[in-house]
Image (cartoon, rainbow, N blue to C red; front, side, top):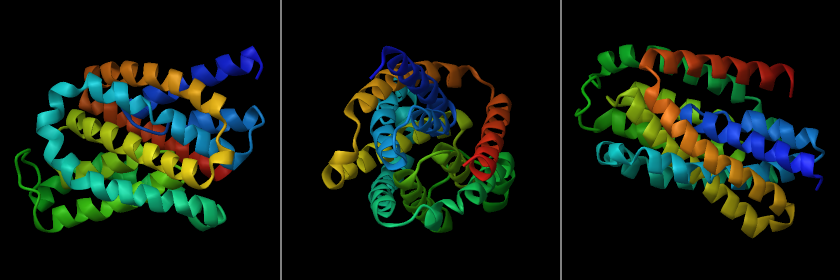
Amino acid sequence: MAPLDAIVIIVAGLAAGTINTVVGSGTLITFPTLLFLGYPPVAANISNSLGLSFSGLTAAQGARDEMTAVWPVVRLMLPLQLLGSALGAGLLLVLPPEAFTAIVPVLIVIAALLVIFGRRINGWIGAHHADAPLTGGRRIGLLVGALFTGMYGGYFGAAQGVLLIGLLSALTGLSLLRINVVKNILAPAANFLAALVFLIVAWHQVRWAVAGLLAIGALGGGWLGARIGRRLSPTLLRVFIVLVSAVAVVKLVWFS
């Protein structure tokens, strides 16, 4: 690997780790970068999942003060998030891309709308109190949503964070800061499990140097993003989420 390529991959990992921690969609930086550098799509996707999963280590560490408040939601959603990730990784290996990625722009638009109108939806369903119990339809919605966002993350992962933020905005009374903490645990966990599946089933597709360089950048990005995210106002963060969602849809529809 050329030194310049290595630097480009580390910088892309840093940017993606930061964006993943703040909102999600970091894959929309690293995946096209790896394609531009000449790596095959499946190998790029697998190596990307492995490398970017490391952003969760520093992101979670940076938000450890919020862990007690968000742990009930994490404990509820994490098992199905991991199951969905394993299923999504399997789909990547057996299905043509068109079978799954055709609905990705629609999912991202829905997620962005949930982020915009999440507080109003909370009012309709009685979830506007942070201590409202996760029971009934809200609990089922979170479980089903965890499964399907995990599948999406295991298959491709771009804007998985946006989907999780939209889901949590609509179905929990958590602040956007705490929603981001939950997302920064669930999304990297899904990426890491998908990477483990790839290591077992398609280890020959992993580009170890690429994954290692992405991991270096992602670790720094997770640390940086955790600090940036805590300083953004909820309104500014929502605006940023919608802008990232719009860029993601444009890129996936017109430049894929």
